[in-house]
Image (cartoon, rainbow, N blue to C red; front, side):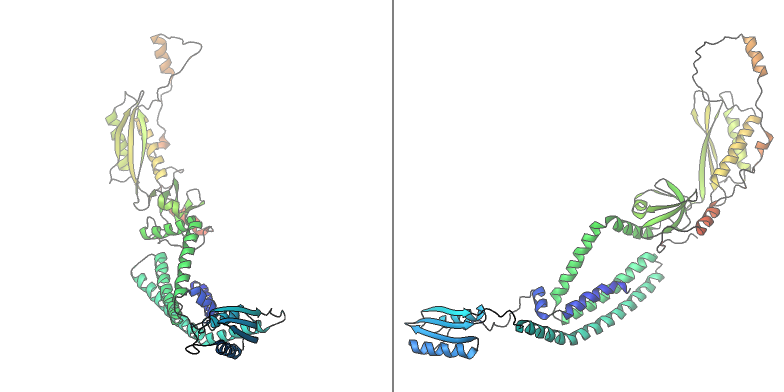
Length: 461
């Protein structure tokens, strides 16, 4: 939680130590300001009817009293005022002209006051600016202490609130990632409330709103610039909520088959059946079709065997059904099926559907064992399994044999007989038909994970 507040602290301290004049410009408030000392009065009354000498004396005394002018001189002729002398700034010159113009019975003003060129070695403006800056800093120290105390208090409160929120969400059995995001969000909201109080006390509410608005705009810009990263992060949240798979599940994602290892805020890590780590971005995982083989351990495989037209389809079905009933790895429920799939040009194709408990047995091993036994039983019972019909072209022609020659040739052919070893339920190559899931998962546990970061997956029970 500490990193979330560091940048906020820095911005707040800069705003607190900034001179009030600069803050006033940033805030751009529309409050009524104090009158400018150089603003001339609207009217100066001398007497009901003032003569030139009275106007001259009155203006000369005022200009001398301000101490803004060097050798100020005033001449009045028939209500026309002539001002002369020198001053340091143009504001003082304009002020003198406005003063004379607003004086009673003045008809016109000729302002001949000269503006003195500043001395290049005059350090008075810099000294004055430093004094003003020092006064602003000293006046800001009490508020700075107050702001730090308030922020520290709200920081502690935000940590306690975030910890309490996380404990509450754990009891609700929410996903770890969502727990962390929700707890951090609540803590940051409490801390921002403390910042708002500090700005409100400093009468800088508009500055706070400006900063928050700029932060929101910056978030939109960063979201567009890092669209893929944002998309993967949001996808990780959705996957954590929906839980389409757990750690160790055997899944197929975007035509990639493997065992789920980790889910981070960037990618989903699979251990393929070849023993390789595969990282798939969460955005692709979320938008892809996910086939989870572990969610239901019962898996079905199918295969096709073609028998000759001279063979009995019913006998072939009964032989296969008997093999399925006696095979220990083939499930009785759902029952295996042997159905006529197609009448091909040279064969009758039978489709076999077999169910296996994938958590106990390897589907490929069971399929190999079943195919071997069916082949042996069909050969033993004389169920023919001819090749598919093919068209062959003989460039040198075809020799036509008589019927007797053909029968003699057929007798010389060796009759296919079943091999005794093929009738075994389990061969050495097929092992014990057990599942290899645990072996692959153990290999994954021993290997180095290429995807670092917190794992967001629930363990597979």
